Image 1 (cartoon, rainbow, N blue to C red):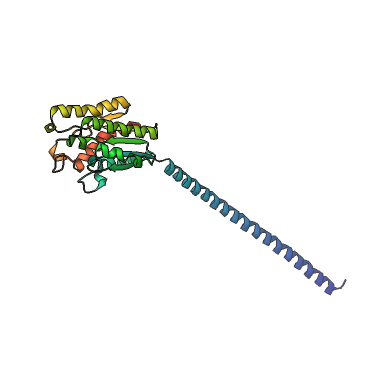
Image 2: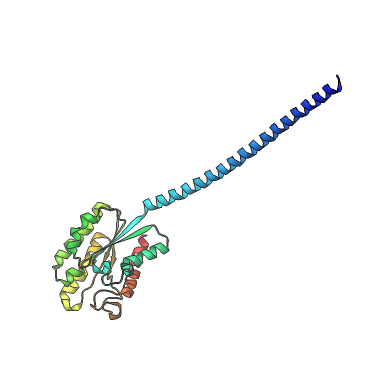
Length: 247
């Protein structure tokens, strides 16, 4: 074999080795790339799974959120206040949120509402699921001199409707007092209506929702009947004492 042939063979060998080396390097690069993509995909999948898990948790919490409905008159509605955020139901929601409890408060107060008016709107109210029902009606009946038997029957009908809709619903009945100018006999019997209903139906009973507020000039508006924002803070604390154990 002459020198020219040896040189050509060496060149071919070197070229072959170079090609093998290039292929090897190429395979190494492909492997690194695939590994990198796989790792990135794994991280993305992991992050996606975490996001889906968080969204699912939020959805479950939203679905399972329970409802507290305050069903009442102008006291519940927050008559005369700058905003309903100052009314005691909204203040109850603040207490609930501070404790991170899974409840939503609904203010279903209507100014001027009587027990009869409340009874008439029960079908509409009960279209929603209610876990805690706070009944605050009857004051306007007393101020108008409505026969107490009628007030008693209407409040009983409201309680019956709630129980028939969902037996597990907790009911809180808020008692009310009347000013003495309505006559001692009437005011005394009026007071007993709420206590009797609470005992008969075995519901949570707030003897006087305006405790430490009613009759105190500084805590009531100019009409002497409807509480100020400060008065509603006291009412919220009173109601909370009876509501919190249910939550």
